[in-house]
Amino acid sequence: MEDRPPHWFRSRFAYGPHLKLFQVRFDWMVNPRNNHEEKMIVLEGGDSVQVVAETVEGEILLVRQYRFGVGALLEELPGGLVDPGEAPAVAAQRELREETGYVATEWQYLGKHAANPVFMNAYVHHFAARGISREGAPRLDKGEDVKLTTVSREALKARLLRSEFPHPHTVCALLAYLTSTGDLK
Image 1: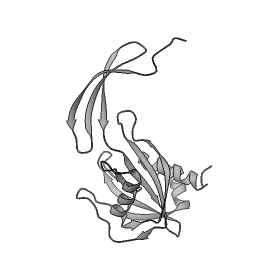
Image 2: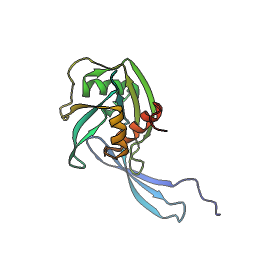
Image 3: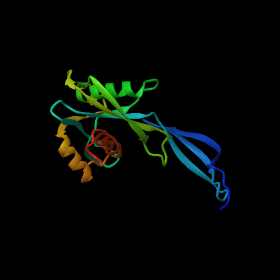
Image 4: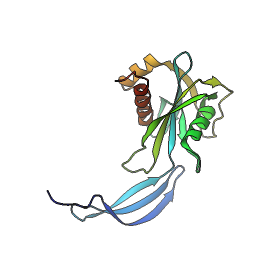
């Protein structure tokens, strides 16, 4: 077995256009296997959060919103971007309140995963929220159109196992949540 450097080397970089949610960065990376230089794209963006909020009756809050990338209305967990300088836990509380109108008395950090390690530098933090109660109407951003739904934990698990949630961040958060509750072993 030959010795190779532990990772690819970035020989230079340049910034591209600033998009609504991301800053494009071009990295010229040198392959340690053959020294071939390749221009890669990285989307620099902030971390985000996903919240699994459960009512005392065992219902999980979901939101329906149109996702432009796939051109479809998707059902997923409430969540959103972490504001600059904001802790992920604070962002989770804010996003739950903004998208659903609910607040929680108990929070549990479920971990994080890379948003899309192929071309993004951000992470998605997952939280469980319990002891939730309705505080008021949702406070949606101008660009949001979100409808609140609920599903039982049992139905949620069945839908997850049937691959009915297309959003990978929702899938990861639900797997972490159901594992933490002992519903997945």
